[in-house]
Length: 374
Image (cartoon, rainbow, N blue to C red):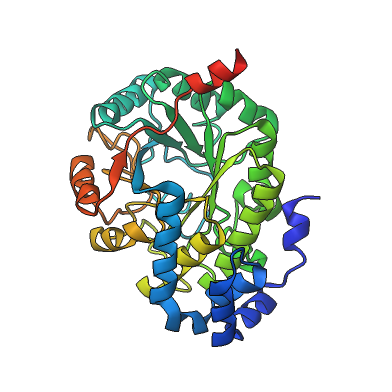
């Protein structure tokens, strides 16, 4: 049985109706529950819960401090390629768009990595579009091998792979995978992905399970906020996290909250998510998952990121560039989307300390696995 079997039990319209039908008493019951259930999740995501947002946020803050302390892990992306054969309507890399395409050489990847290393980063994530003629598994393996001496943790956010391919990336030094379903609504998914390999909803939704079977140490999931209704998308994201936590309990889970940003193609969100609803979603997930990492990227404004930092977030990107070669600034390719928070890593550290937190550059070392093997 896979998560596909689990999600097929739910109709998105029915889920949204159930969430919107929750009352104040349901929210109060959810806040009293030590171990919230799926019906409590619905209550926390409901319109009724908006009257309790301050209490929910306070609970989320206390829970996060208890489980993670006052720490924020910093990471940065390295875009290997912006070439892509998918037609995703919301993405700047979409094959629809007439943009400057570029795939980095290994020497260029190393220069990007050395720059980030000099900025203090020890956690990075490698990203590509989906164009195997330009950036296939061999490039990802070679890139990870080339830069693994610089970083304690390397994650990938690339096209879905098979179990054996994920095992190869692990051998090359990769220990984490981030994969967004974009939307859990099958109808919307088909609409957003008119052509390309990514159009296969079932294959993509089973990707975290293949990575779990391969032994990936960390897996991150999420939905692209602004496509479907955030309430039902939040529910299905939690449902997915619950499934992964039960079946791949040795893997560390994280959830990201990317909101659609301006990009080539000019896509406008179908269901815009307000800042208040954004806060509600993040805090609801924290109450449901006290031990799951919650990730916030530079898609969001500096002010909002400052305000959200104490409410459940445990990982943040800083000084990010979403174009291949962007850190070096020489002939960089087009970016995937525009960032909103352009502060430097040093400025982010100052901000984090001013909030009473510690910026963490490294929370893992590959040597731990070597010692275990011995």
